[in-house]
Image (tube, rainbow, N blue to C red; front, side, top):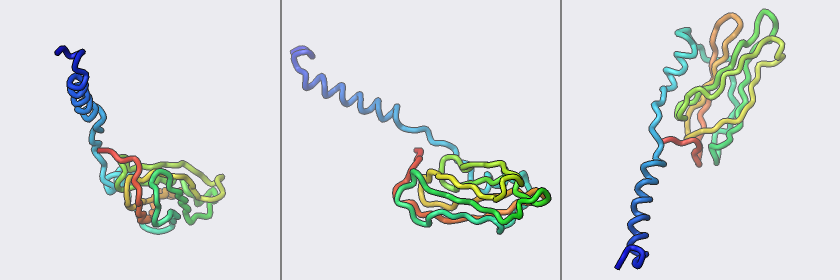
Length: 153
């Protein structure tokens, strides 16, 4: 019988090849992840990062890592002489460790950053604030994620 006359065999062969091809094409390329410590070191440019003055408000347990609320606040008078220059947020297990970096200044009134982030899995989140005097301060929080988001290979 010809291939046209035996649709079962012809289709079975095509489906098998198509499935193999789909696996090859869809499989994501593994990204090289920069460890959290290296990302922090790179951001600080070799300067010391001290703990304190930075507070993270993030749920300790989230059902879904697709949209996790995060609030970072920094103790600062936010005057012309003493203010926060930037706030950067890092994570330890997402494909890219730097979540966001925001530049602010004394006219902001308060040193606060509110956003939503995606989390690939349970991990530690670190926020670093650069002050007007050049000092770097940090705070961190642990988050348990029950349904992961942004997962690569």
